[in-house]
Image 1 (cartoon, rainbow, N blue to C red):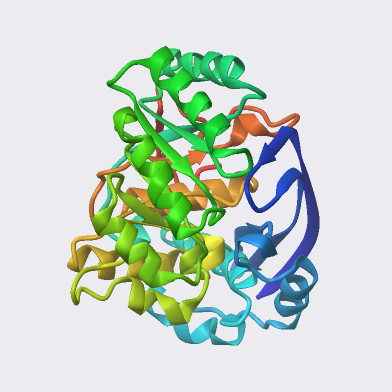
Image 2 (cartoon, rainbow, N blue to C red; image 1 turned 180 degrees about the vertical axis):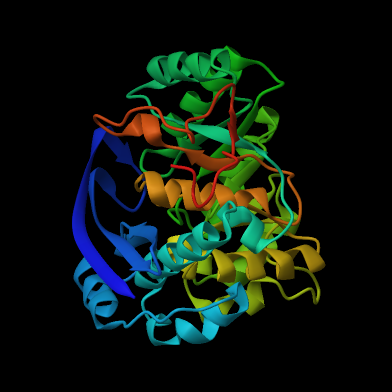
Length: 345
């Protein structure tokens, strides 16, 4: 099989601020694998602050990998074993191999993974310099058809975040779901008091309120606090995933936030979602603020999750300079998978 790797760069139209980093641009890799007259594409935009290896390490791992033809998705785990220590690299190569196989069979990648659905509901990630501008953006998102809004918290004071969130709830009304993401920026005590203070907002959930490694703090917050808890960065450490899902006495979160680039690809992410469903834990998919191929891949994964109880974090095309609309640009808060071979983009 022929293997091509190129560098890629994406510039954010405006910075995205989290409690862990301020993002202005994304640097990554695009991978193309060709064989038997068919090609497949993958890409990755590593983000070490959120659980992947650095870009240089990902590139070195991909260049050292020798792809071989395969006939079934079940063969991928063994074939990609050399990339287990570099999840972002594994994600890129897995994506390219999955599209190669799907194109050989003339089907969408989602059908390689399982039975799914055509329509995927997504949330809008909204940003604003102050409460008024955030509320204005929230209203624009709702007018565009989004029924779930996501707001980053934790980089500002608790009082400022509370003002911002109250302004959004007042602007959009009670029927729109609001989820917040602290990116592990709070202590357990701050998380508990903050979420209690926000109880009147009827938040859908809070992503990663405390540090990724603090599984027991997550567990306590999930079942003693007033807001459902989702785990995101906590999934980056493979050794913690089983602990997060331990049902004795109960799992450490209500929801898993699946980032395929952090989990090493679509296949391991889907396996984790299925394991979570067995113990009553839901899951949804988000991207790493990356390119069109990775976003398409994440949407194919979202379409085949065991249940669709939450909107997915896949509406990011509008965050980048010069990014045009494509088949995975949401319409009315929904992405409809193209009925074409491969990714459909």
